[in-house]
Image (cartoon, rainbow, N blue to C red; front, side):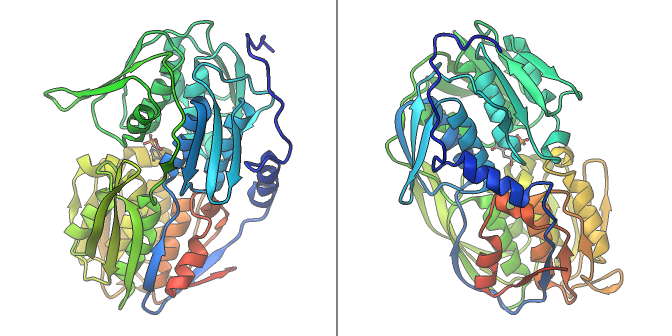
Length: 482
Ligand code: S3P
């Protein structure tokens, strides 16, 4: 174990509310040792009511990361208390941040920029790709060792996209199975600031490089040819980082961060509702006849609102109400009514603003008249599962006409819910430890004549623990068991 440098390791508090202990128990409940938990969705009566969805997952991860690295106190409300985000909180605790819950507020006492402590144990990120990739960036520029592991899904996902720029900064990587978890990092004595052009549309890669740059002297530059979600840039500025963004004549973004600057806690940080989670009740309301559902407090940042834009183009009745700014972000309430949808060709350049929403869009497309064409989906192959393959297999299992290509998908829908073998449904969907595959096909089942079963609903707890209860509250017929 390398020396921990000038930092003295603080004792962590056993049973701390952020809960290494709590989390270990959850791992026993949901981890690979426990049994899969099938859930069935049945044809549901009209969905009605008003709901709020949990806090945005991307912003919640960053609230723990940036609150944990900034000096002083950050108070966070609206945080998503899903397993993925809790894993990030536990990682920051393991590196010196103090995190506790006070009523509805999460209170983060950060270490100060440059002052992370060497973690004593292995850091387990479970299913959380954003958590592990951003944390590897954050610690990759520190002169100490850190080891990362994840569940079966996360251990299959490519980490080279983050490790490559870290290597350029001087980070040593020990990975035994390609650039995949489990792996260990050891940062250099002094990290080199780099200029890095992100080779794929990935907010995680952009963010990992910027976070590594926080502990490098000089200016770290990320060049982003295709804009992705901008939460890291906006939030780092809010925490006091000297970060500027310039968009050139070609629309390419140049993000420059001055390293080793001060970061200060944010007294009152509010996390808006997650548009990716909102996608499930929104699509359910569009495809279940008679539905009228309002989803309140949804993040409407343009880098995240591609699904709503697409569904409106398809003829979806979605009223965007009460637009406002909360916590520096645009938010709105969405009133959604059952609609006759028409297939469209979704522009490939819209993919980054709805990358996590293609599975649920495919469910809407199944009920749209005509063939919906979705292109530019190569990144779907490396999400929590190969989402293109998982969606195609699930559509096939439920009699829905579709075609899968290397980076595209078409779905030929029918508003009457009748497909290849008569009425839609009747199939069991393999979810491959992917929360969004599970929730998307449960939404499908609410509108099908025959039940749709997902083989395992455990991963829903990573991003939307209250999904089943919330949908049932709107009138959805969901039940445990096949
Ligand atoms: C995320 C970025 C996206 C997205 C993920 C969250 C983030 O991943 O799919 O759910 O918070 O930065 P990629 O960077 O791999 O596109």
